Image (cartoon, rainbow, N blue to C red; front, side, top):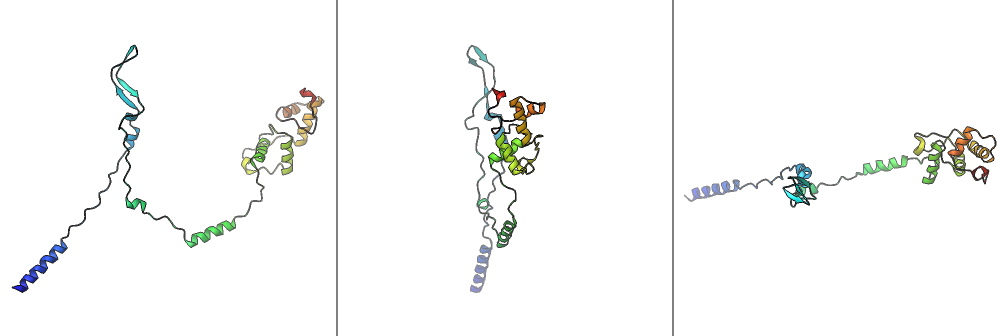
Length: 204
């Protein structure tokens, strides 16, 4: 009898241990489509009924308002531990070595870098020479007219005249000797040089 009771007790304990209640699954936050709330006209308009507006009687209609009390609720999804526990990607030693090799392979550009002020000289040159002064022309002659930097190379239209033609046009204009239509165009589209015809009698 005692043996049967022991067997029955052991079976009951085993059955109770096997039937432990499982933990309920964590509730999932429902997917909220908040676009209608963000673009609803209720955020910017309100229904207005009959009322007086000065000497007139306003008709019922929607009127523009700055906002409705309590109409805009923030729908911020709850942050779970899964969304903030993602590890940041780590660089492996192989990635670092490959990056350093790529950096060592970069050769310095043989082209000279230009300042913003010098680039503006090239921009005036590439705009058919409009508004160029003598300093601009001397800079372009020193650098070489064919060494246009890549920043202004696209759509570059160099002037049809040279530095010498620029000086000659101003000399003809200021001395009123043999002025051609091209000379007048150059004078009209450029700044008077300081090394010749200074002062210019034609400008007085």
